[in-house]
Length: 262
Image (cartoon, rainbow, N blue to C red; front, side, top):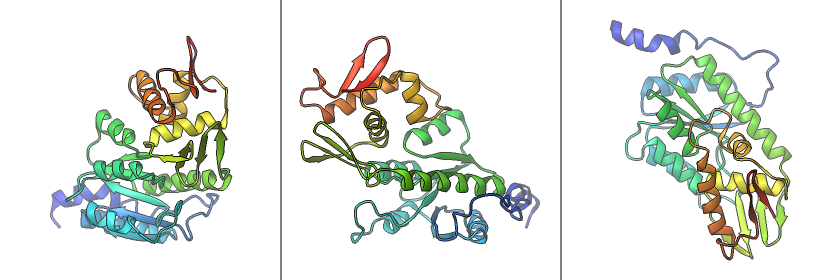
């Protein structure tokens, strides 16, 4: 191995011997992780580290192969073949951003951790905006990667266990575990942020939410951008929910404060 390769790989290789803290919850014994990474060495090292933690790991070297693994015609609604997806952005055939966006458009709620050499603020925001749950820049510490995986899986495990089977308000029925919404008996397709907004509203009907609160709950406390993105998503949501979006009956504007359901 030449000197340049050693310098490039050291940030990962030096930390692969790290182990989780002994008091961390042991949620990974049967959990399944899909690694979508075209760089052989990174793919193999991440696989070894996660298998060493007790996770079941499947790997894909490009986006199209990942889609094949994720597309199961026999899958029942609300069932998904993986509990976590680790996704590189610079992939052949289908790039990571397009794959992430497609999965969210299909209603796949599985946590996605992006790995990328592109570490600018714009790149990170874009990755989170298309539906990723976390973003880690290369080169990275293997200990930090494992810790982030555990946190995402722990959060997802808590959400699944504690979610009710459905919420109802008027003609709207929302199934949180299946990421499905029915309006007047017809199923509608919501983008990930739209679904999370509606779920938040339906958990607390008639509560008024400010733009800042919605950004914090749906986009995350570290969101960097214009608060008017909330208004845009509310408009899109109304177009899908309301019989007459110009006179909304569900998502109501409370002038000077924010929005509420009903």
